[in-house]
Image 1 (tube, rainbow, N blue to C red):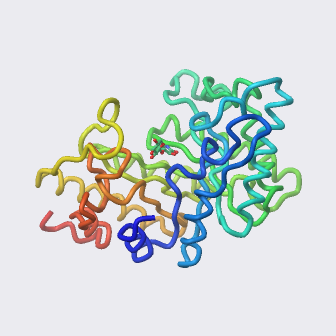
Image 2 (cartoon, rainbow, N blue to C red; image 1 turned 180 degrees about the vertical axis):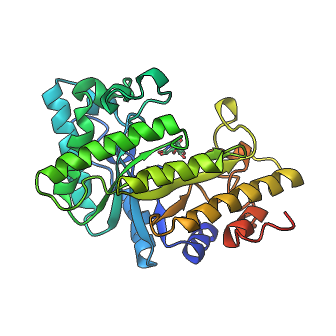
Length: 320
Ligand code: XIL
């Protein structure tokens, strides 16, 4: 790990999520029956743990960055793949990882408003290999397997665009349904401990929507994590996606971004009792996956931006 980055991390943070290195395409065997590849993630994690940084695991069950063999075969084989993968990875990281994203991005991108009141099971991402093989049940199966694999870690459902109320309602219904069923079996705790709101926002994010979603999850009794926060100032998708596409920000962009970061952190502070973790997706604008949008708190030379100071002191937006 590069020294400058490492120094910045241990100075400012107490929890780290690896951006890619704990995803299934990094950890799982490339072919069925092959070897797991833990060493890259292990090297990073061990160094972080030595510096008293906690590790959040991201992510176990996802439709992206997952080898195709894992979701191929009969339903019974895919079920075995899911259970074995979770058991192997969680056993490997027992005592090192304090919380896991168990299922990532399982809910449909655009909820059909007419169908919003149907069961959450009709609102899942049908192109997911896990869904295709196992139907909606893969979600509860993943969480139950994870709970048994390591009862000491916190289990999260993680997704993006949860500021969209339609999507937030579906996720809340899903989490509540699964948790209610688990509790009816006599368990005192939740099965899904919390929801991760990724927080890949733009300058036009509606803060009231973010508030409503946090409140919605608080109301069903789960924790809320801001799991992948970045605020793009220009659209960094499509041909503009990926690192090293950053260009200097205008003064206006700097100010606008700092104001949005401040507004969000004011809100997060109000709800701090329910928000155990806020994770930024990337440190600096040059290496961010959305570098074209300059979404981070540090610029490409690792200088803190106005947004950094806005996060430190979100109530002082005068002068911005
Ligand atoms: C992104 C990484 O930042 C990129 O480097 C990678 O090429 C693709 O994945 N939701 C998630 C994250 O849960 O894992 C994604 O991370 C961003 C969207």
